[in-house]
Length: 295
Length: 164
Image (tube, rainbow over all chains, first blue to last red):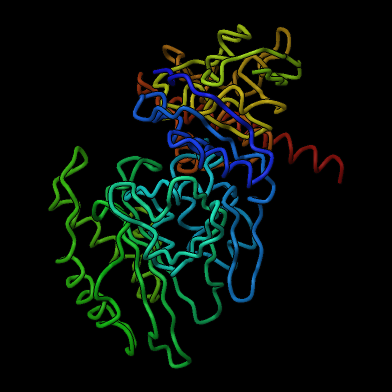
């Protein structure tokens, strides 16, 4: 359980970091290392060179830009959970952060790292799909702005090319018409989810739903968007029967794989129930706080 | 690679391989074997230490990443002959059986103790959810934590009253 040998450089500029990784196909970026270091210890990863970007101040900080919040890649999960600006402007993201692993990991793990890692059971990719976030990347050929729906692929794959780095994520700022819901189930708080869902919606002055999106956790081989919610819910005053219909339709499209945590039928049911609870929370349809917490 | 760290208030400089985990650095390079190593891949929490005052897993961090940072290990708790309040409470409430998970439990609870935050049992269980006890002695660990945190909170409130 010891990492294999590798070279290590503390990057002093973003360009230097990108140059170093680009010029060696077995090089990797490292920041918090909360996913990468276990992979090294288990020897599932054998990079020749690790370029540490955690001391680059350009990747830090959260700031408002127009009607979005720009979250630097080095922002830690614990900061996403606690920072007042994130809690106010992106409450879904703060709520999701509280479910990411355990406190010790949230104190080290970075937002950009979790996004680039793209685990299907992770909270942030699902939240970003729900929020319609934009992933901002840098490489030697410049900056790209990639919609979250085009960023996350299956089996830890993303739109990132080798040598391309997530530098920030932009999420739309919540306003008084925004609604959100989050629900997740794991055997032990902080463990990888068996299933979960993040919901982001908007209402108009009359309380009718004008948009709704959901990202699903552990619902397939990668971070997954819920299908068919808009058709059922947009344009209506959303009630429990509408939610049930939307969830039933979405559930049919899900294909989680059986694993040690449960059969695919069980996992599909957990994801669907999580989606139902998250939609209930978003549209304020009752369900007790306790029910939400245990979800 | 030259790495300079401050551990429990004392400065150390060592030349280490980049691949050395912080947990191994503390144990093998500095001889601070109070930090226990369990799973070595970020699951069990035994190796929890404070990095600039916040709990982190030392098995999930490279020693070189701690360069110019401040660490606290379980050796930093007791003062001479006097056990720390958390250690006293774990002793009083039988909060340890084999003791392997104890340093991690203590270091996870330390910032909460220092902030004198009074937690419910549910919140304590949430706070230590990243620490496994293979003796499964969680009930007494929760009781120990509750005793220590209540005492710290009582003391803080008493101090605030005395000042007021």
